Length: 451
Image (cartoon, rainbow, N blue to C red; front, side, top):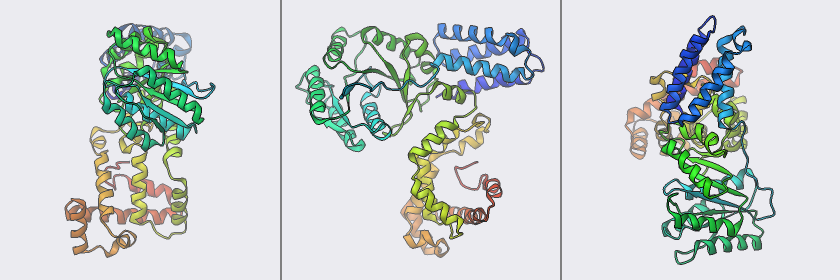
């Protein structure tokens, strides 16, 4: 989401790092570039002005100018200003209420509310250990009711049935009553998309809010709408007592202006980012971690948390034991590792959280194609269990069968087997304690894995 902004800010900071001494002049030159980068990212003009004034006031202070490493000191100033701009810390859902706690989702048409309802249900079930009921009050789009019913089944949430003939207020009230009788912890109510200028529709959602008294009223907005996202959030905030914002489609080609502006303009925190289409693609928004990613310092903490939540710990333990005993790393193990990588958002998502990702050449970034990972998995899936365990038996006719089954050329099978053979040797060395050598020799060995 912040690719262009991140590159521009890192370039400006790099110039300052190279200065032997900081002056008001070279700080002003750098801040001019920062200002242009923020405006291009569609950050609201008043927010840009306040941000630049804040950074300038801190950067020309005695502590920075007298620092032994003034360039690094300015980066710390910009980092602190970004964190302050986006809200200091993660603002958790306030669910400490008598069950059922009600979460009401509001937003424009096409902002992704229905998918977000399912993502939020999954997040609450898996990370907060709460039972969840979801209900659709979108009577204007019957497909939305069916969509939520299907999604509820995939995330393990209870679905409250509703029809287009019912009134939205009645649906919401009945859903909360049903949850109370069933002992369910949280109710998520998905509402119809509405324009903030549509008085009748705004009256409707105000009535729903009054009927269910939610503990959280979240505005769901497409981050790709840029500054318009902030303007509509402000309008909805005038009509409803919003408690927070969820930015969807943050993995797309968004410029990031909404994330940097919405807190300052509306006073409401961003609570979550939608970072993909899958139901697990919802991340709590941490301003400090996001600021670190924007400045190219990575987000290792989120990466560790993500690994803890998605990696099969038992599978990882068995693989570690296997390698330690020198019993061999086979194609089934390799496929498992590729699948784990996919669960964590793919190569590009992982690299985005690593420090120094902005320094990776564009040619290397172009290799970070998750389609290649899926092709490798398809090739391995087309093999028999015996072939996966004993790759050496894969010869001419077997290669042709595997190629046909996975939709690739035989040359790709040959290339993968050769690369896998090298990886097996590395794993054997790892079992003998050669981790450092293995990491160095792995560089560029597997397609789509440039590191």
